Image (tube, rainbow, N blue to C red; front, side):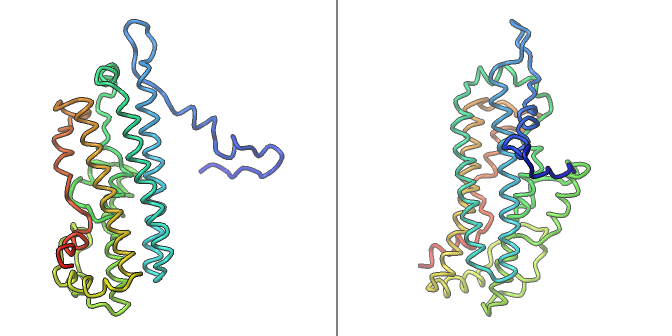
Length: 270
């Protein structure tokens, strides 16, 4: 870990944000055979994905705090940081518009240089999935070292949904015991008994607003997945993805699988 900077006369915007170091991280690996220089569009690809990783880091930072607030019965603070996470998700989706300015030919000009590098290897996005209870899509063994350790810890930990459910149980809500004692390493499944409790309490505006904000988060993740699938289809069609992945065909299997299924199932009850 680097030492903190001294807050003195030389404490500037640039050294506070580590701008020189940050701007040194965009290292292209491609080579244009005509000029011998790196391909122009690789820079956009690198920056977009580095920014994704920064936003994933911030979302984990926010949602971990949401879990703390739910455990401490601080519903208003939990909702506030959930809403911040929603704004970040909208930014993630908006970045796809920028990436889609790259034509298939422009991407193809440097794609082969990516070798086995693939978005499937984003440990932070896998952490985000695990935090939301989506724990059945990746083998932890794919990741080594610190990334593997972080994922193993996330996999074993209760999810955001578990924190929400346990908060309601402490508040006297009728929560089925199997939901409170569920295996947190498994994907979240519907609980008809809990759905009845949610519907019964929906007249409470504060409770309903928290549920709707959680639904917004779930929908935001699904929106990002959909835009990601369409971007991949637009860029490489049905070809396999980098690193030997199935590309768009695999990504399509992740669509319409909500993290919080109870919040979707209750819609027919009103």
